[in-house]
Amino acid sequence: MKKLLLGLALSTLVGSGAAIAADVRIGTEGAYAPWNFLDDNGDLAGYEIELGNEMCKRAGVSCEFVVNEWDSIIPNLIAGNYDIIMAGMSVTDERKETINFSAEYYPPDPSKYVGAKGLEVDFDNLKGLKIGAQGATIQAAYVESNLADGNTILTYETPDQSVADLMAGNIDLLLADNSFLAPVVDGSSGAISFVGPDVSIGGGVAMGMRKEDTDLAAKMNAALESMKADGTVDKLIMEFFEAGPFFEN
Image 1 (spheres, rainbow, N blue to C red):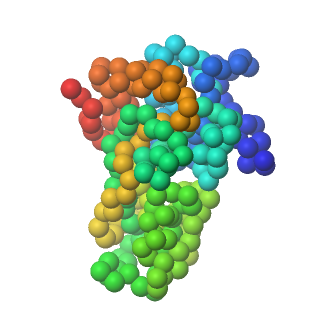
Image 2: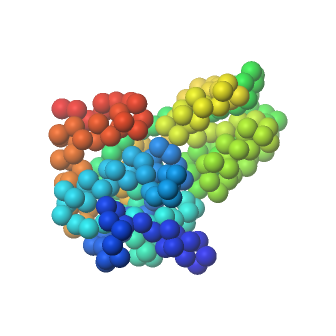
């Protein structure tokens, strides 16, 4: 309940400061740049916020973004506290057992390891290391399933906490999405760097919705597909990730 109240307290209306009832509520983490984050004014910003704004406009619905901590973001969708998840969430078979996904609005993003500059690791025999990942992510599931034998696995509530522990030398390796890590590595003044091979986990990134909300899914998918067709999605990806284009015809 504490986490939910925090999320509701940080709710931000899309495109308006007016306190009006929204047709659709969108849950996001607000802590995963460049996907979604709070800017210097405390307002939600990022790729998914801009994308969601435009999708709602094209779908003809008023939308409200709700900030919710990552580890409870699916349970609070199921509980009806919002209608859509837009939080850098990769499509996985496990998640599809609980929720439905829209069409992808970002292609599969490789997971990468980062470590302190000069770190030498034998990736054919990862043993005796402290390996970190954000909790309840595909990366956490991967390291817990594949690397727990002979290593210490640490998980974190937020991605920033995991980076801080890596920078402090409290973990040897951090596994996360390339799209999140790339600007972190670039801004580290050489303190950390990518190491080892890419790891392919999960599919692309999409909206998560309750299985019964088929009408909403159809409406939002139609808006998303129109944005892909006219280049709007690729334009936003190139703006926030300096990548792509991925969806041009």
